[in-house]
Length: 270
Image (cartoon, rainbow, N blue to C red):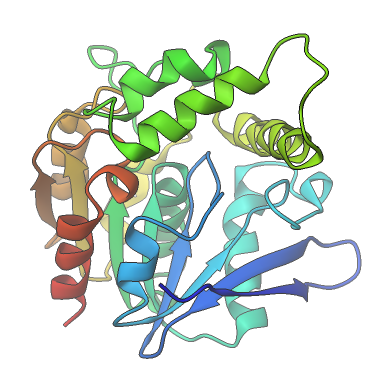
């Protein structure tokens, strides 16, 4: 697996400074991450880089990206996505978004349909049904989140997440690298909370009809964070959308079941 190139792009005065991870050759693919960021180049990302030139910008607060204070609300967040596209010099890319990133991708495709060539939404948030409420991730400890995010809580990605819990608490034997990991988690969750708290619903459902890009909706059959009901709603509201359900997968499909997920995304891109 080839490590990605990391570079920082300046979006201009009084605007965010963004770290972008890039790898692969082929048509451009913009990858928008979820609330957990991209702590490692793993899961679905290296698989997509076999077919595409993957551009994965980190939102302010994640990695080396800064400037969260310049994004006042979700509208600034969505426009920020287009600023990043412009800075990267990418036109009409295949946009793939996961969870929070899927919400951002859907909003971008609805706001400026002509600027998104193709779309894949992996368990996006952004909708709400009282009969299927999303859990309050900001009121949970990491170990409490794991059952909601993974179907197999013993898969490597779930075990790595559980291992992070050992770093919390009163202790003085943490390495510098471990301290930085904890700080990065706090910064990233602050970004996610700014746009998702208290309820991750900002009227997206009213705009889904505006999406014209060919759209694939991917959902884990065992998602306990965002119920598969939401996948059906996305697929019904977006014209011509296809729903692909991944068996034995929870919310973080890209970490738990990356192979069938990547295959579905690549097939849709042909």
